[in-house]
Image 1 (cartoon, rainbow, N blue to C red):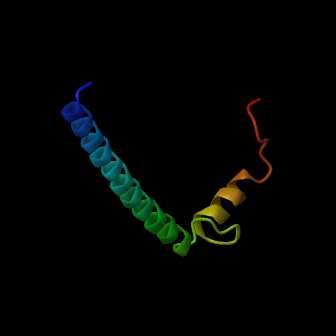
Image 2: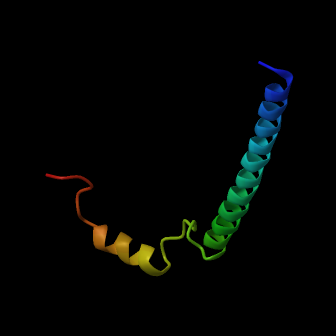
Length: 68
């Protein structure tokens, strides 16, 4: 490979590394904020006495866990 081709390849690799890092940072920012939003809304609460979880637990009482 000629020196010019090596330089072009190196610059291209550097640009791709920057793109990867940018995408990774943006993905982490999105997922962290979404996860925090879900946690703040109580999605991960283990308390059955609240809302839809309570209704779901009550509807399952006395029913077998699996099919027949």
